[in-house]
Image (cartoon, rainbow, N blue to C red; front, side, top):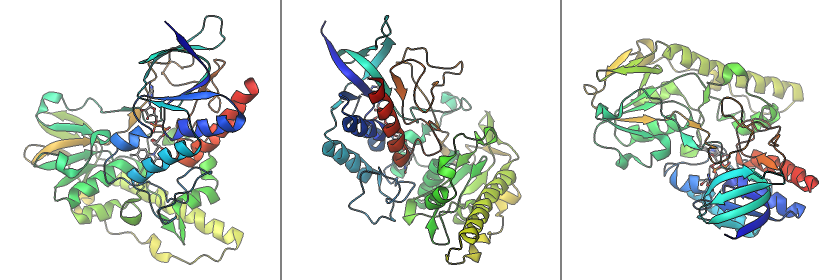
Length: 408
Ligand SMILES: Cc1cc2nc3c(=O)[nH]c(=O)nc-3n(C[C@H](O)[C@H](O)[C@H](O)COP(=O)(O)OP(=O)(O)OC[C@H]3O[C@@H](n4cnc5c(N)ncnc54)[C@H](O)[C@@H]3O)c2cc1C
């Protein structure tokens, strides 16, 4: 069987793989990008139709390429992100081969590189960059059995309200995906219940600047590690409807019933932790701490930004927060669908090298694995908070390209 030889093999044709290709080209490193489906596949088939970027177009982009067909303060729809990434691939003449899945990567016995098995034959690579995404495998907790007679789907499988059967919906998870999908379903006429856990909910804009601008000014994009206490705290931000601060009390006023964390399910009844008020208060504290930090920055720098005292006004607690339901008989509540917005895990089953810890997490330093020639890109906290986002991954790719070039 013939074996194709490549210098550096990039696995994954999303924003990370394409950024890697751009920087390897600049460094003069020959490479190939393998993508099992199409460029930017996740934005085509694993996101809901109305999704827009979480950050404004001036920010959520590569440093080397602007969005041309949208106001820089606007939020690019998913289809525009696909077009943007495809255009970028064309412009940099990225050597992308679509429809090729990598099924196994092993280290050569003499340590001189990697043997790669794909759906279309064998490849020998000196270096490998794993750019298969921070969100690879939708996670659904094993709470409700499949036999419960309900439609259960993950946010990665959700497309639009028409996909759901008649009846009410329980959305579990209130990060950016859960709140946006709950809002869309409620606006489409469904009765929606939303299970809320610990969360951050930063202000979309404050004193004339977007939240992503504030993260930059306050140095928070550069945070190098998630504080251990915050690992299970999701973040609720939204670019939908022109971008707005996620406000759970406003969602309740709109008609959504807020619930605590879903804990267990038995005999058709879902049980919720008595933690809703605490989670809402935690989100408020995060929101107010951003305002405080921004005010302090403005004072320190002597900036003439407009005052915004109304930003500190909170709506009153809705009844569902004051007297939260601790259990819900799903059939009696007319619930026919559970939508799990419960995040993602990693899936590196194909990467059979000794670069994972005992929990299966990739071991690396800023993306450089202890296995010579192996690199990771696009993972959460790879080098800093910005790492899984489009502009952050571009800078991580630049660093890795420098490392790969130097190793040659
Ligand atoms: C709902 C949602 C909204 C988001 N919104 C934003 C946002 O607004 N702004 C932002 O910056 N980030 C956003 N993100 C985060 C992140 O930027 C995206 O998840 C982005 O898709 C990550 O890009 P990536 O290239 O690292 O990985 P992916 O986009 O996941 O690309 C990896 C590619 O690898 C391919 N692949 C996987 N395994 C193999 C294999 N074995 N062989 C060959 N190919 C393989 C996949 O098909 C995929 O195309 C969002 C994430 C989610 C879930």
